[in-house]
Length: 208
Image: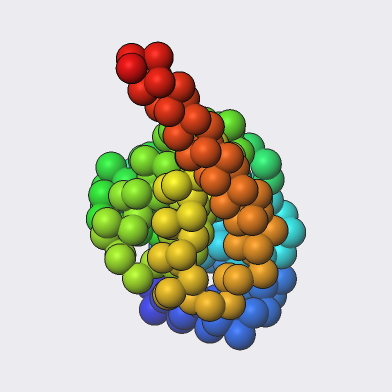
């Protein structure tokens, strides 16, 4: 019986790898009836359900897995990503934070947490998360771009431009996304510096 269950799970994983998610869901539902304590079964069921468009059921499956063991990075990460896609950004934030408590050196989780903070209009926290991502993975072009965009939104044009240039050095294909705003950032920076120079000039003149 145990071997039959293991074979079911193996077949289900194979179906997932072949992107036959509905078939995998059906097999995994049967498997879970017989092996309700299988964390691997719940995890794979959650993954298959999420790819079958059954988001709420997928969350339930991930929660079943976490009820068995809440110290598995991949489960928190996948649940967070699913919640983000469902526009539950507060829930996604909490799950990414749980994932990062388990593995604080995962650059992708930091980048995704940054995206979640951005959606929650917390620019400072987003920038901090992106900074952690690129500190762990210095060649992470997407995180550099996301940091650039966050700095742009926060009005820090000097940092926005620096991060955008770093992103483009790593991945030139990001140019179209960068070009959507970088000219605005450059113009603002020139205007800010010119205003500062005028202010300093007036101060010098008043001291003469």
